[in-house]
Length: 380
Ligand SMILES: [Zn+2]
Image 1 (cartoon, rainbow, N blue to C red):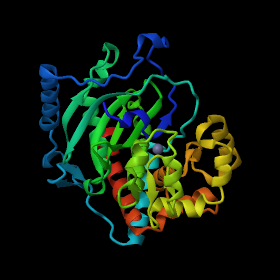
Image 2 (image 1 turned 90 degrees about the vertical axis):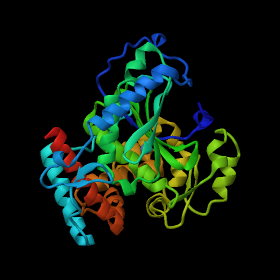
Image 3 (image 1 turned 45 degrees about the vertical axis):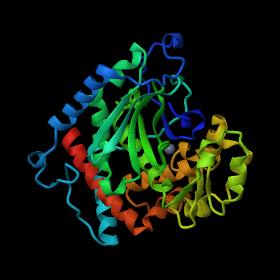
Image 4 (image 1 turned 60 degrees about the horizontal axis):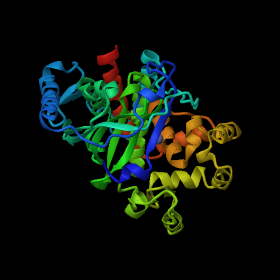
């Protein structure tokens, strides 16, 4: 399908779910990745259904809640902007985070490494492009009967996309150029972001449709993925195409990392001096990184767990020890969803890191009012 698929570095979130509705006999499922797209009439029928779905069920002013405003540009109802100053937004954010916790429970679920999930090859099912707020130009992959139902479940694809586009204001997700539906079977990968191979300064968001029924985890996961987009977009990091497309063992990774004065994102590029990621790294990882490398934490699940136990006061989740990139994504998700902490622990300091950026405090209040409104409409 594309050369990126071979040695691409994806930023992911892994989950553990108990249910398993696939047979355990791997031989009946896909063993090789399909890279062929559906064409002709089948393609036309699916595309027609996609357009029907999105435009028939089109949101208009009449479906907005009384407290919401209708945004014509975004074709959606969302809460009005309700805070201006840093203090206002900080207080509002805390109030909203507490309300959501009370009414809908804790969206911050712990991800566990259990190694019990399916281990199928990651298979892309559909790749959409974005046209404003809508999914467009779908490319459907030819797959076995066992998973074609997931590929054709356009209602679900649209539902997931609409959840994401509702939570994140349009002006804050300009870096996104596409949306993909994939699966690697139950559990393992739940969602990912990856540079768009058509333009590496843009990004694709992907969701594993087999795991997407875990709705609370999906919301915090979409926030986690958005944190990657926020911290790796063009104004934060210079994407290095040579590194991105190189084999895993190519010495170019070492060379590029050595030439980078700031935090280097493995497989991608060099962060900018004032980027969130580099500042986060300076404050929280500099003293840890040598030991983290020596113990090979990134490549060994057991070592990950041990590292987390050794430094439990420093990480919001066990998954956060994977790398500084994953740590900052986990921390940002906690920053959004939890009331501002007042403790002295390092994991709390990490959350407070984002509270020092006015634009982030404002964004937090905006996302939380959208989230509360979404939950009230869909799960109230
Ligand atoms: Zn991630």
